[in-house]
Length: 444
Ligand code: ADP
Image (cartoon, rainbow, N blue to C red; front, side, top):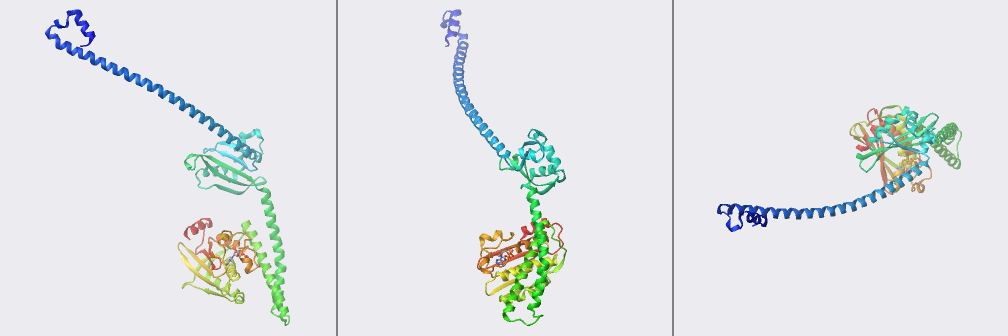
C-alpha cells in the first residue's frame, strides 16, 4: 500500500489491521490509484526530461545551420555584387546601348551608351525609357518589347531610321533559368549603324553607276565582235578567228559580271522587280537549252529533258525564271566531267508547288563547303581545277530570285560524283513569300 495512505489510516485507526472489514477493499483500490498515479508522474517527468534534452540539442543544431546559411548568403551576396560590378563595367564600356526592362515594362537597368545615344546626360538615367519609346514611336518599340516576353527567338528590327540616324535593335528575353516560366525581363540592345549603312549605300550606288556605264560599251563591243566572227566584214584566217572568239568570250563574261553586279545592288535595295504570270516551265527550259546548245556541244555534254505528260505550269517572272535556269544549266556544263550529262525532270508537290530537279554527273561540291554555296562570291575549292571563269555570284542571285517568287532552292552533292539542284516553284499566285518559304522548307 502507498505509504502516505498507510500513514493517514494509521492516524485515524491506529493500526491498519483494525480497519473495518467493509473499508479494506475500498482502501486497497485507493492505494492502487495512489501508486498508479505515482508511476505515471514518474513517466511524465522522465519524458519531460528527455524532451527538454532533445529540444536543447535541436536548438544547437538549428543555430549551427543558421550560421551555415548566413555564411552562404554572405558569400552569394558578395558574388552577386561582384557580378553586378562586372556587368556594370562591361556595359559601361559597350558601344551598343543596352536596357533591361521587367516583364511589366519598367526599366531595371540601362548603360551609359544607351543614355548617350538618346541624348541624355549620366544624371538623367530616369528619363531613359520614356526617351527611348519616344525616339522609336514609329516602329512601336514598346509593343515589340512586350511581344518579346513570349517570343521563342530573339527579335530584331533592322535599319530603323530615327532623326538622322539608322539603328539595329535587338530584343531578347532574359530568364532566371533555362525554363521560360521565370522570365526576369527583356533586354534591348541598340546599335547605331548609320556610318556603315551610308557607306554600304554609297558603295552600292557606285557599283550600280559603274555597271550601267560599263554595260553600254561592252554590249557594243560584243555586237561588233559578233559581226566580225560571223565574217560579215570579210573572211578570217584561223588565228584571227581564235583571237576574236577569245574577245567575244571575254565580252560575254564581262557583261554577265556587270549584270550580276546590277542584280545584286537591286536585291540589296529590295528593288528586284518581278511580274509574275502563269508559265510553262518546260518551254522555258527548252529555250535555254537551245541557247546553250553550242556551248554544250563544245563540252560534249548531253542533256535529258524529261517532260511529264501535262505541261508543267508554274507561277513566276518569265525573264527571272529563265535567268535561274540559264545559271543552273550553265554551271552544270561548266563544272562537268567528261562525258558530262544532265537530267532535268519535274515533280508535282502538294499544296500547289512544282519541283524542278537538275541532276549532273560533274565534279560535285565538297561536303565541308556546301553550307557556303549560296553566299556572295563563294566558289568551291575544286572549281579552280576545272575552270577559272566565274564570280561566285550566280547561286546567290538565283536563290534571291527564287525566294522572292515564293519558291525555294537546295542541293545534294558529292565530290567526284555529281550535284542535284532542287528548285521549288509555286504553281499559283503567292501572297506572302515569307510564309511560303517556311511552308516549303517544312514540306521539302
Ligand atoms: P560561279 O559559277 O560564277 O563561280 P555560282 O554562284 O554560279 O558562281 O556558283 C558558285 C559555286 O558553286 C561555283 O563556283 C562552284 O564551286 C559551285 N557550283 C555551282 N554549281 C555547281 C555544279 N553543278 N557542280 C559543281 N559545283 C557547282
